[in-house]
Length: 246
Image (cartoon, rainbow, N blue to C red; front, side):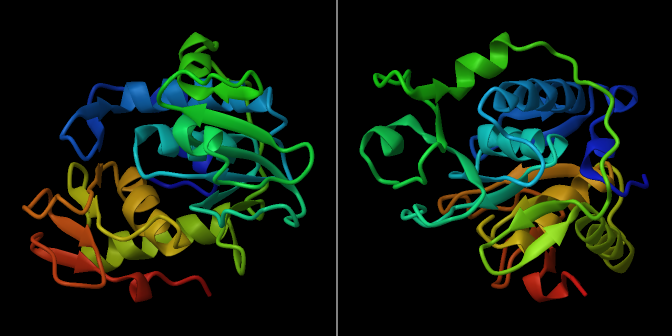
């Protein structure tokens, strides 16, 4: 598959029943679910002011966190996984998607006007938008998109990466490692590093492979490739230094 912006990986024509994502519990999600629910996530996040030029913090490495990432990308926002807890001075920071328990505990300090979007348990505080409930009730369609490939999609606070840079790096990994359709790529590095998002999320999506989310307790072989800078049970390993962002 070829693509220059991430929304091109989630089009209506690509919806089918092949597995696209496996979470840390082993639950599988097909590509039809990934596309449709990413559109719903984008529609929901739009209500929280997510748009081009703003940053969205995302806490967690699970299917809901990935939906927030894809929804943000389709709205031309910039995702920052695992942001710092003090965000009060972050210009352009618009929303934080995080577990409800973290938000209600006051773990994060946000800039004035930034929205709190919680997933997991139903929030008790009225100003926390419930991501789970909101996404499932949204319209399962999305307006046609025309995203400039140079639009920022990822940041770690120091560097910002565009759709084009991210997908070019993903394409290079596919060629270098001969990643094929159906191959499972296991994410064993934190998504706070944009290179892990590119190698572990965008690369298998572009290759029509399978994104596999692992946690610290997942120590058995889960796929064909591991995104890891240390030894892993998978037979092939993609190191973060192999992700070219030049």
